[in-house]
Image 1: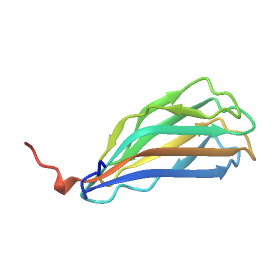
Image 2: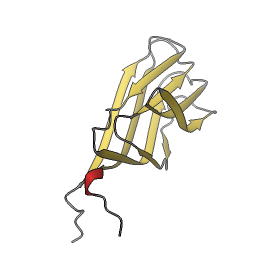
Image 3: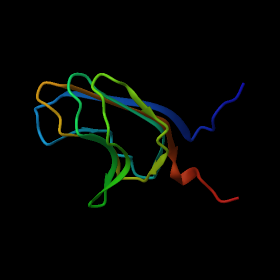
Length: 124
């Protein structure tokens, strides 16, 4: 049986919220702790009732938002499941942003991947 080294942790994180009808509604994933990295291998999202203008996954930290994925054509009620692949450094976080959401819509986003203790990574 295959086992990951002790410094890896397999993650599935998700969040949901009911839209207030703002320009941008955001689901915030936890901030990556110091001396850790988050390797995201998949991003998923859905808006139940009305389609937003677009949905983005952003890396937020160090005073910037950097878009790492964007879906411009979104259909309400459809689960989007993307092979998002991004490495998020310590003290940064992943954000799912729903632009143009309508009030009372249920927004949902999830990611999976690996949390790695950066202090345990060595060069060969």
